[in-house]
Image 1 (tube, rainbow over the protein chains, first blue to last red):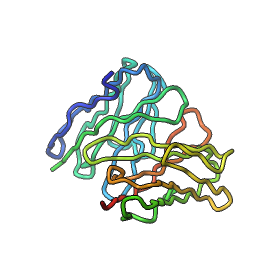
Image 2 (cartoon, each protein chain N blue to C red; image 1 turned 90 degrees about the vertical axis):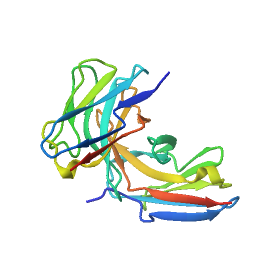
Image 3 (cartoon, rainbow over the protein chains, first blue to last red; image 1 turned 30 degrees about the horizontal axis):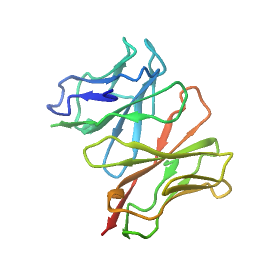
Length: 112
Length: 113
């Protein structure tokens, strides 16, 4: 089992560019999450999904969109990147409403 | 408005001694608490959890204590080992369909050999 994987590992964008971060899990988890982590702060929830075809907003959803077309994949999109979106992005997944979330290795994004 | 606070950004402990990491919360709706450990360039990994119906949970060298009246929890690591050096995040969740986790800002633990 690969667990939770994230693509890419690192990316540099210019302000205004768009990109999509891919998260994949092979544990047949229903719930998937996208977080961002900034220096001196904990992980903050951007968006989450409770099942295939569903998405919901988390604590800091502005500037991001998500899609969950397949159960194993959760995509995070930035339509027009801003320097404030420079961060490390983590994807996680879990069984139904269990609290133990399994995290991917992270994607480091730098927006210039 | 941080609902989960870890007021100590860093902690250094000698190998073999006890490490105590603290966490405070403000939301009385939180009823489940977790600790995650994170190494550099890796994602957080689940360490231990506790439900609000308990005041203590043990797993090997790791024990989590919950004081509901003080809205405080702590993680004890005994004995501490150099491999325990990592950032430790406290997280909490409340009743809700998605059980969203609210994380603290983390404490960097360094265990000195």
